[in-house]
Amino acid sequence: MFESIHGLTPSRAAHLTALVEECLPLLSGDDGMELVQERLRERGAGVLEAILVTRELLGVEEVSLGAAKEIVLTSPARTAEFGRQLHLAETIEDSDDGSASWAGAAVSTAGDDQLMLVATNEAGLRVRKPSKPAMSTMVANLRRGNAFLIVERVSEESDANRYVQVWLRDDNTYQLEYRDGSAAEHYRTRTISQEKAITAVLGWASGDPSWTDAFMWNNIGSQFSGESQQSAD
Image (cartoon, rainbow, N blue to C red; front, side):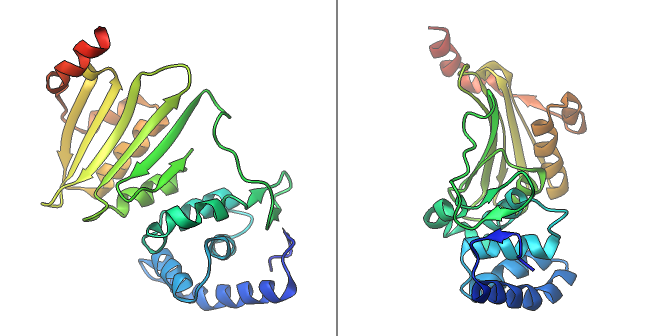
């Protein structure tokens, strides 16, 4: 176990193996992964260790280090310390053969594509190129104090605003909004279903226009008339 992690000492590998064995039974519950992340935090496991343990629990052949990193960093147990430890998480690097480096170069995500998805929540967590599991987890983790999520398409060549956002209101309904390039194309709806909120975010992120068909949308572009006029000027 953990043989593919370059630079990992035998004692640290044994420690990580013990964590895997302790956390494995927790996965059988409905909130298994959340319980795993909380247990790892209680045991003093850092972000790097939590990422490696999470990947081992889910299957090294099935889950990439990048996906495991997003699961750890978007978990409630880690959100509060995200700002302090993100730079440590970025020292994990996937190699072409699926192995990893414990202290490799920082992963660079900016500039790889002309158009990039970026997900940001109210707690300050910012994930570049988020996976579907990461976005789903970020919506599922919305609560008081972390009630907003916005997923946007960022382009260095365009200043057009294209994003979808979710707000978990005090009445436990989800307010969904999306903007398609200009203030005039800003739409809003609400749902009581967390599952529908997740489906909406993933549908928008996929670029498939049919995702909007599941809702009745109100165009609220008139609320941003001042913004439209400023853009025109």
